[in-house]
Length: 262
Image 1 (cartoon, rainbow, N blue to C red):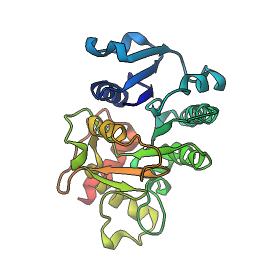
Image 2 (cartoon, helix red, strand yellow):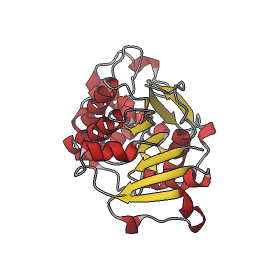
Image 3 (cartoon, rainbow, N blue to C red):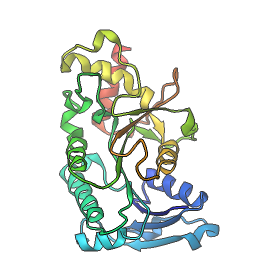
Image 4 (cartoon, helix red, strand yellow):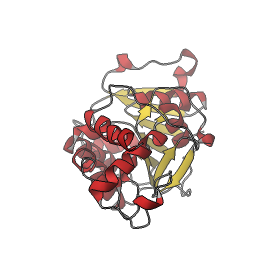
Protein backbone atom coordinates (compact mmCIF):
# COMPACT_ATOMS: atom_id res chain seq x y z
CA UNK A 1 0.00 0.00 0.00
CA UNK A 2 1.15 3.54 -0.73
CA UNK A 3 1.56 6.60 1.45
CA UNK A 4 -0.50 9.12 -0.49
CA UNK A 5 -0.82 12.88 -0.16
CA UNK A 6 -4.03 14.30 -1.60
CA UNK A 7 -4.56 17.98 -2.38
CA UNK A 8 -8.12 19.17 -2.97
CA UNK A 9 -9.74 16.31 -1.06
CA UNK A 10 -13.11 18.06 -0.67
CA UNK A 11 -13.76 18.59 -4.40
CA UNK A 12 -15.76 16.23 -6.59
CA UNK A 13 -12.73 14.34 -7.87
CA UNK A 14 -10.80 14.62 -4.61
CA UNK A 15 -13.61 12.99 -2.63
CA UNK A 16 -13.55 10.02 -4.99
CA UNK A 17 -9.77 9.70 -4.74
CA UNK A 18 -9.96 9.83 -0.94
CA UNK A 19 -12.75 7.29 -0.66
CA UNK A 20 -11.15 4.83 -3.06
CA UNK A 21 -7.65 5.26 -1.62
CA UNK A 22 -8.85 4.48 1.90
CA UNK A 23 -10.91 1.54 0.65
CA UNK A 24 -7.78 0.15 -1.03
CA UNK A 25 -5.80 0.38 2.20
CA UNK A 26 -3.57 3.34 1.34
CA UNK A 27 -2.40 5.74 4.06
CA UNK A 28 -3.60 9.22 3.12
CA UNK A 29 -2.59 12.74 4.11
CA UNK A 30 -5.30 15.19 3.04
CA UNK A 31 -4.63 18.92 2.85
CA UNK A 32 -7.85 20.92 3.08
CA UNK A 33 -8.83 24.49 3.85
CA UNK A 34 -11.98 23.50 5.71
CA UNK A 35 -11.84 20.14 7.56
CA UNK A 36 -15.57 20.32 8.29
CA UNK A 37 -16.23 19.56 4.61
CA UNK A 38 -14.28 16.31 4.79
CA UNK A 39 -16.42 13.22 5.35
CA UNK A 40 -14.31 10.47 6.86
CA UNK A 41 -15.46 6.85 7.12
CA UNK A 42 -15.10 5.76 10.76
CA UNK A 43 -13.37 2.50 9.87
CA UNK A 44 -10.58 4.30 7.99
CA UNK A 45 -9.79 7.17 10.35
CA UNK A 46 -6.60 5.54 11.57
CA UNK A 47 -5.19 5.68 8.02
CA UNK A 48 -5.79 9.35 7.29
CA UNK A 49 -4.05 12.49 8.52
CA UNK A 50 -5.89 15.75 7.93
CA UNK A 51 -3.84 18.93 7.55
CA UNK A 52 -5.44 22.36 7.39
CA UNK A 53 -3.91 24.92 5.06
CA UNK A 54 -4.18 27.02 1.91
CA UNK A 55 -1.69 26.18 -0.82
CA UNK A 56 -1.68 29.77 -2.04
CA UNK A 57 -0.59 31.00 1.41
CA UNK A 58 1.95 28.27 2.25
CA UNK A 59 5.64 28.73 1.58
CA UNK A 60 7.42 26.38 -0.82
CA UNK A 61 9.36 25.00 2.14
CA UNK A 62 6.08 24.19 3.93
CA UNK A 63 4.64 22.53 0.83
CA UNK A 64 7.82 20.50 0.37
CA UNK A 65 7.82 19.40 4.00
CA UNK A 66 4.20 18.30 3.67
CA UNK A 67 4.95 16.27 0.52
CA UNK A 68 8.13 14.65 1.83
CA UNK A 69 7.81 11.06 3.00
CA UNK A 70 4.94 10.14 0.67
CA UNK A 71 5.07 7.65 -2.19
CA UNK A 72 2.53 9.47 -4.35
CA UNK A 73 0.85 12.85 -4.70
CA UNK A 74 -2.52 13.44 -6.32
CA UNK A 75 -3.34 17.08 -6.98
CA UNK A 76 -7.08 17.70 -7.37
CA UNK A 77 -6.80 21.29 -6.14
CA UNK A 78 -7.55 24.26 -8.36
CA UNK A 79 -9.64 24.69 -11.49
CA UNK A 80 -8.92 25.92 -14.99
CA UNK A 81 -11.51 28.71 -14.58
CA UNK A 82 -9.15 30.31 -12.05
CA UNK A 83 -6.84 31.22 -14.93
CA UNK A 84 -3.45 32.44 -13.72
CA UNK A 85 -4.35 31.42 -10.19
CA UNK A 86 -4.55 27.79 -11.32
CA UNK A 87 -1.19 28.09 -13.09
CA UNK A 88 0.37 29.57 -9.95
CA UNK A 89 -1.07 26.80 -7.78
CA UNK A 90 0.28 23.99 -9.97
CA UNK A 91 3.67 25.70 -10.08
CA UNK A 92 3.76 25.92 -6.27
CA UNK A 93 2.82 22.26 -5.82
CA UNK A 94 5.36 21.14 -8.40
CA UNK A 95 8.09 23.35 -6.96
CA UNK A 96 7.32 21.91 -3.53
CA UNK A 97 7.65 18.37 -4.90
CA UNK A 98 10.93 19.29 -6.60
CA UNK A 99 12.28 20.58 -3.29
CA UNK A 100 12.03 17.10 -1.74
CA UNK A 101 15.62 15.90 -1.60
CA UNK A 102 15.10 12.17 -1.60
CA UNK A 103 12.45 9.74 -2.83
CA UNK A 104 10.23 12.26 -4.57
CA UNK A 105 6.68 11.00 -4.94
CA UNK A 106 4.94 9.95 -8.13
CA UNK A 107 2.74 12.95 -9.00
CA UNK A 108 -0.66 13.03 -10.67
CA UNK A 109 -1.91 16.38 -11.98
CA UNK A 110 -5.13 17.23 -13.77
CA UNK A 111 -5.75 18.95 -17.11
CA UNK A 112 -8.41 18.35 -19.77
CA UNK A 113 -9.02 16.70 -23.12
CA UNK A 114 -8.24 19.97 -24.91
CA UNK A 115 -4.56 19.44 -24.07
CA UNK A 116 -4.36 16.19 -26.05
CA UNK A 117 -3.08 16.02 -29.61
CA UNK A 118 -5.91 15.98 -32.13
CA UNK A 119 -4.06 14.10 -34.82
CA UNK A 120 -0.60 13.24 -36.09
CA UNK A 121 0.19 16.88 -36.80
CA UNK A 122 0.63 17.60 -33.10
CA UNK A 123 -1.97 20.36 -32.89
CA UNK A 124 -4.10 20.36 -29.76
CA UNK A 125 -7.64 21.23 -28.85
CA UNK A 126 -6.36 24.07 -26.68
CA UNK A 127 -5.19 25.80 -29.86
CA UNK A 128 -8.73 25.99 -31.28
CA UNK A 129 -10.77 29.21 -31.12
CA UNK A 130 -13.18 29.38 -28.15
CA UNK A 131 -11.16 26.67 -26.44
CA UNK A 132 -7.92 28.63 -26.09
CA UNK A 133 -9.48 31.54 -24.22
CA UNK A 134 -10.64 29.34 -21.33
CA UNK A 135 -8.28 26.36 -21.30
CA UNK A 136 -4.92 28.06 -21.87
CA UNK A 137 -3.86 27.30 -18.23
CA UNK A 138 -3.68 23.60 -19.12
CA UNK A 139 -1.03 24.38 -21.73
CA UNK A 140 0.88 26.57 -19.28
CA UNK A 141 0.82 23.83 -16.63
CA UNK A 142 1.93 21.22 -19.16
CA UNK A 143 4.86 23.42 -20.21
CA UNK A 144 5.85 23.66 -16.54
CA UNK A 145 5.64 19.89 -16.08
CA UNK A 146 7.82 19.35 -19.13
CA UNK A 147 10.57 21.35 -17.43
CA UNK A 148 10.39 19.23 -14.28
CA UNK A 149 12.25 16.05 -13.35
CA UNK A 150 9.59 14.69 -11.01
CA UNK A 151 7.81 11.48 -12.03
CA UNK A 152 4.58 13.13 -13.18
CA UNK A 153 1.46 12.00 -15.06
CA UNK A 154 -1.22 14.36 -16.38
CA UNK A 155 -4.81 13.15 -16.50
CA UNK A 156 -6.69 14.77 -19.41
CA UNK A 157 -10.37 13.72 -19.30
CA UNK A 158 -13.28 15.51 -20.87
CA UNK A 159 -15.93 16.99 -18.55
CA UNK A 160 -16.44 14.74 -15.53
CA UNK A 161 -19.75 13.84 -13.92
CA UNK A 162 -20.91 12.58 -10.54
CA UNK A 163 -22.32 9.27 -11.76
CA UNK A 164 -21.74 5.59 -10.88
CA UNK A 165 -18.45 4.17 -12.08
CA UNK A 166 -18.38 2.15 -15.26
CA UNK A 167 -15.09 0.53 -14.31
CA UNK A 168 -11.76 2.01 -15.37
CA UNK A 169 -10.95 -1.18 -17.26
CA UNK A 170 -13.88 -0.46 -19.61
CA UNK A 171 -12.72 3.01 -20.57
CA UNK A 172 -10.67 3.82 -23.61
CA UNK A 173 -7.29 5.12 -22.45
CA UNK A 174 -4.83 7.01 -24.64
CA UNK A 175 -1.41 8.55 -24.24
CA UNK A 176 -0.88 12.10 -25.52
CA UNK A 177 -3.61 11.88 -28.19
CA UNK A 178 -7.39 11.97 -28.09
CA UNK A 179 -8.81 8.59 -27.02
CA UNK A 180 -11.49 8.87 -29.73
CA UNK A 181 -11.24 8.65 -33.50
CA UNK A 182 -11.21 11.94 -35.39
CA UNK A 183 -13.20 11.66 -38.65
CA UNK A 184 -10.88 11.41 -41.64
CA UNK A 185 -12.49 14.37 -43.42
CA UNK A 186 -11.72 16.69 -40.49
CA UNK A 187 -8.03 16.03 -40.02
CA UNK A 188 -6.86 18.75 -42.36
CA UNK A 189 -9.46 21.38 -41.45
CA UNK A 190 -8.29 24.74 -40.10
CA UNK A 191 -9.08 25.54 -36.47
CA UNK A 192 -12.38 27.43 -36.88
CA UNK A 193 -13.80 24.63 -39.03
CA UNK A 194 -12.41 21.88 -36.82
CA UNK A 195 -14.01 23.32 -33.66
CA UNK A 196 -17.50 21.83 -34.20
CA UNK A 197 -15.90 18.47 -35.01
CA UNK A 198 -13.96 18.59 -31.75
CA UNK A 199 -17.14 19.57 -29.93
CA UNK A 200 -18.99 16.60 -31.41
CA UNK A 201 -16.37 14.26 -29.91
CA UNK A 202 -16.60 15.65 -26.36
CA UNK A 203 -19.65 13.57 -25.23
CA UNK A 204 -17.59 10.41 -25.75
CA UNK A 205 -15.09 11.78 -23.22
CA UNK A 206 -17.55 12.71 -20.43
CA UNK A 207 -16.51 10.24 -17.74
CA UNK A 208 -17.47 9.63 -14.09
CA UNK A 209 -15.25 11.13 -11.40
CA UNK A 210 -15.09 7.67 -9.86
CA UNK A 211 -13.44 6.16 -12.95
CA UNK A 212 -10.93 9.00 -13.24
CA UNK A 213 -9.97 8.48 -9.60
CA UNK A 214 -9.66 4.73 -10.06
CA UNK A 215 -7.34 5.11 -13.03
CA UNK A 216 -4.96 7.39 -11.12
CA UNK A 217 -4.86 5.13 -8.07
CA UNK A 218 -4.20 2.09 -10.26
CA UNK A 219 -1.12 3.76 -11.73
CA UNK A 220 1.09 4.89 -8.85
CA UNK A 221 4.15 2.80 -9.74
CA UNK A 222 7.37 4.68 -10.44
CA UNK A 223 8.50 4.74 -14.05
CA UNK A 224 5.30 3.21 -15.42
CA UNK A 225 4.25 3.62 -19.05
CA UNK A 226 2.17 6.64 -18.02
CA UNK A 227 5.16 8.52 -16.57
CA UNK A 228 5.65 11.88 -18.28
CA UNK A 229 2.58 11.43 -20.47
CA UNK A 230 -0.82 13.04 -20.98
CA UNK A 231 -3.49 10.44 -20.32
CA UNK A 232 -6.83 10.66 -22.14
CA UNK A 233 -10.06 8.91 -21.16
CA UNK A 234 -13.17 8.06 -23.16
CA UNK A 235 -16.30 6.01 -22.65
CA UNK A 236 -16.61 2.57 -24.28
CA UNK A 237 -17.25 2.71 -28.03
CA UNK A 238 -20.83 3.66 -28.75
CA UNK A 239 -21.46 5.43 -25.43
CA UNK A 240 -21.97 9.19 -25.02
CA UNK A 241 -22.14 11.05 -21.74
CA UNK A 242 -24.16 14.08 -20.70
CA UNK A 243 -23.03 17.00 -18.56
CA UNK A 244 -25.54 18.80 -16.26
CA UNK A 245 -26.55 22.39 -16.98
CA UNK A 246 -24.20 23.78 -14.33
CA UNK A 247 -21.35 23.15 -16.76
CA UNK A 248 -19.22 26.31 -17.26
CA UNK A 249 -20.35 28.55 -20.11
CA UNK A 250 -17.31 27.82 -22.27
CA UNK A 251 -18.00 24.08 -22.13
CA UNK A 252 -21.69 24.59 -22.90
CA UNK A 253 -20.83 26.62 -25.99
CA UNK A 254 -18.45 23.94 -27.25
CA UNK A 255 -20.96 21.15 -26.61
CA UNK A 256 -23.62 23.18 -28.39
CA UNK A 257 -21.46 23.35 -31.50
CA UNK A 258 -21.03 19.58 -31.33
CA UNK A 259 -24.80 19.03 -31.23
CA UNK A 260 -25.20 21.23 -34.29
CA UNK A 261 -22.75 19.05 -36.22
CA UNK A 262 -24.32 15.81 -34.99
